[in-house]
Length: 155
Image (cartoon, rainbow, N blue to C red):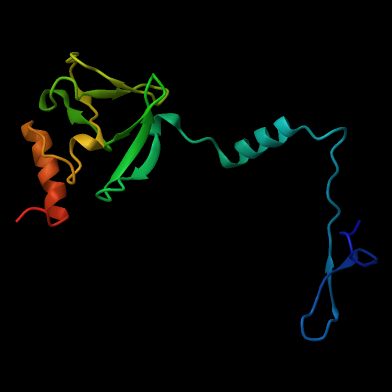
């Protein structure tokens, strides 16, 4: 079997021509394996996903804040919106009520509102983005100042 426009000689075929002389470039062309029956798009896509792997939804979509350049992660909320989250967790007691987030097993970000469980929570990047207003909570302000100093916004 040869590609369209290729000249076959035994198991070799012309695959191109040299630009200077126009002489043919001969190469061995393996015969492609032909599937039995029709090719199903769903199976092709499933095979491709198996080869490349699926991204872990819990990990979110890595991003960079367009304002300050800090790394962050996009997560979808239960109502279908996207929220830009800071990487890593923060102890709950350092984050004000209403700014505590949890990432569910499926990668969905949920605001914990008044809940105050033990352990860590996540915060949005916007709570500590150095190009935004400084937060009032001491720990978040410390994170904000660190980013602002990195950008040269603090003197």
